Length: 256
Image 1 (cartoon, helix red, strand yellow):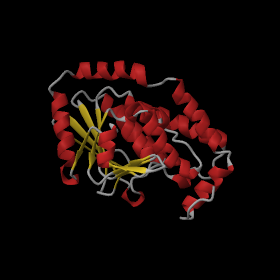
Image 2: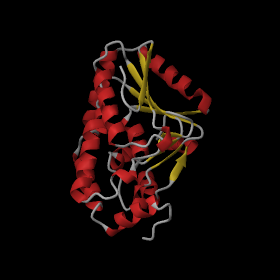
Image 3: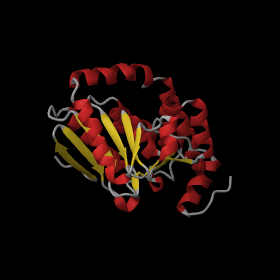
Image 4: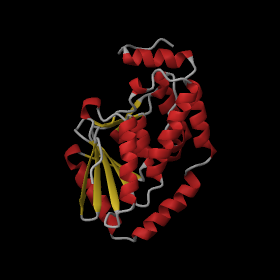
């Protein structure tokens, strides 16, 4: 099976799904989100696949973020719709998948990239990776579940600091915070992800689905996610959003 902007391989009941948009550091645009949605839907129907590894092409970037040029001209209604669509097609869909997803973070995981990694069930990072939610530097908030899942993983105080400062964490700090489960050298990243998948394969796939469903009952889909979408959309009507996105596209620092 082939999906645009993705490479899929299946070996010994483990699927490896690689985002291939290296010219944009694997940034998420509408086409990539739609393709990932189709891949997740298809993989859920494949009984021979028990675990999915999600990674990015190249050594620089897992997913560098969303494609800002695609939404820089949006208003509040379009912004809220952007968030809702992304949640529904991809981020919530990965979180609710019928089999475990391991994010193999091979480089930058920023904005929507970190949100995608957090939607996966576990995360392994290369030692050179950098992780963060820099949306406030654009006059925005994270709009793909970041305000909710980051708090769940690292706690309110650390999540607030990361989002308010728009700063990046190195891999070692991300592991210490609980944002990633394991850190390895880059050349061993896929090997480590496959090793984790092999541990999962020793156990019941039906039980895996049940665990995901039970955990999600407590952590996914609450009112905070809907409120994130509403507030994300409202940010598109602010002067800071206009300045932040313009500065980004002009490759200069914003003046807030």
